[in-house]
Length: 346
Image (cartoon, rainbow, N blue to C red; front, top):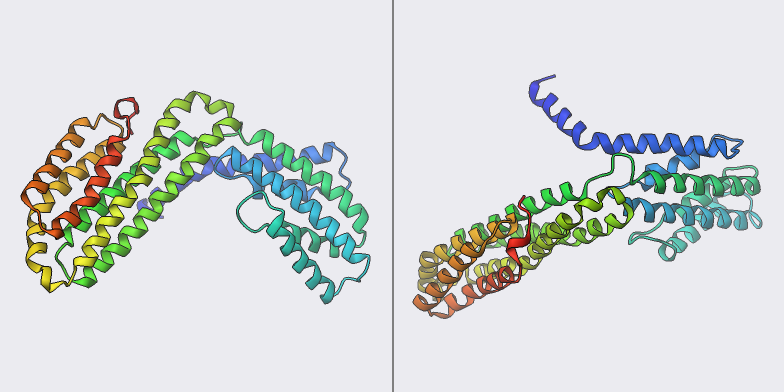
């Protein structure tokens, strides 16, 4: 194994090893708990719960465990009812799966379709004694869910602070790269401007997703008392992620304007002048965005970007220049809305 491959393996093990270990330990604990409670068959359902429930934060583990318990109960009951009328057959299979998926659209704890109801009802069809199967599997699943919810915050708990710090750095890179790249394609052909717009939209989608996930990280603190000491830092990181999400609108608007002016021969002279004068404003704004999201005091950088904006507005008054400077106004207004001195740097 080469050094490069070995390095990737070690990095992956370091990143994912704790998560794998906490799942393995929780699976064993759930299995053993079900045995202590009197399971007369291998308590597979109790062990399955941690495999499907444990996620990146304790809040997700809690909600997914509840979803699985509800799905198993509903699925088992559905399977029993169907077997009262039909013998195990293709018709029974089609009915159970259809009804299970239909119920999964309504009885769910998360945002996605719950397939657990259909899966549990299928297992009932494969069991020769569905009544005993239902009772055993319901309490085994409940035991597995209880163990998962209790252990998830305690066993190598994922750090919202560390994950959010990485997310902030990625958002800084995405936004500054999108902003600088858009200015570079100003005045080029429609193909280059269109490709840049597609790239910018991909970058901003990722940033918006990170901003939305910040709410989940803050919520996870309520389920993990070991992370209470990180509360203030996590709130500061969440504010920066929300700011990054707000900045997306200005970055997208600039890319859309540049794409709209691409190939306009009637505006070629105005676009050429903007291409000459706009990079100064763009560079100052990039520095302000980067420093603000980095967590330091960005007052100097924001003030410099404001001065560059005023100079550009005074020097270039054509309609093209007016349209191109509006996204920068939105960006700077968003930056002014964050209280910079109170944030820990990343």
